[in-house]
Structure formats: structure tokens, C-alpha cells
Image (cartoon, rainbow, N blue to C red; front, top):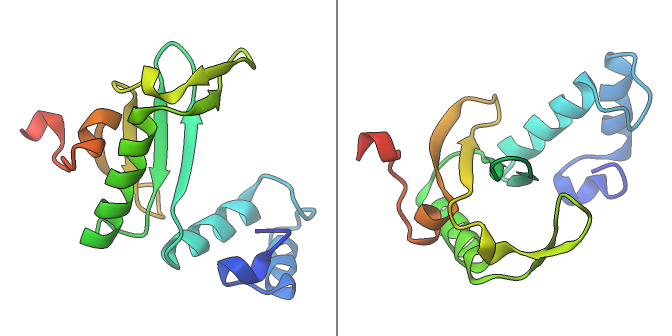
Length: 133
């Protein structure tokens, strides 16, 4: 967002103003960054993060779980489960297909949990919480 703010619906001046509002230096990972990310997600962007550890977790922030976004997420998860190289926690190359059971948490821009599932379930187009059946 900082290097190409227009791509995300911002101007450079708007980004700077948000950082100034919080008294943070440009690029600092604090309140300003969180506000900018929330605003970008509300504007239609999807943010995906992978946390490697004892158990793989994928965090996805979406503006909503509309049918269009469900389709995007399902295609994305299907591609991941088919496999391509990703950077592993050790810094070595791994294959994403090795993580079909990775936990996936999908949240809205405010951080509210919308869905907790697995990568494989998303790839299959299943958008029900497993515990809800």
C-alpha cells in the first residue's frame, strides 16, 4: 500500500495523514497500518497470511463472504492444495500441497471471525463451519 497507494484506493497524502493521525512514522506496523489495512479490505481487497508453526494456519481478511468472494477463496485454496512452492518456516522451499489440513480463519475488516475451516474444505467450496456441519 505504501509503494502503490492508488492501487489500493488511497493517495500518498491520505496514507501520510493516517500515519500522522497516530503520530507514527511512515511504514511503522502500528495503529495507522491497521487502519489502512481495514480500509483497503472494506474496499474489496483480500489479505492472506500464512503462519507456519506446529500447525499451519492461514489467516484471510475479507470485506464479506459474498458469493463472489467465496468463489475467489475457493479457487485460491484449490490452487494451493494442488501445490506450488512456498517458503517454509525454515527458509527452505516446501510445497503448499503438503498442507491441505491447514487451519483457515476468515475474518472481516474488524477482525470478527466469519469462518474457521481447513484449506481443503475451502478448495471444495465448503463454507460451513465444521462444528456447525
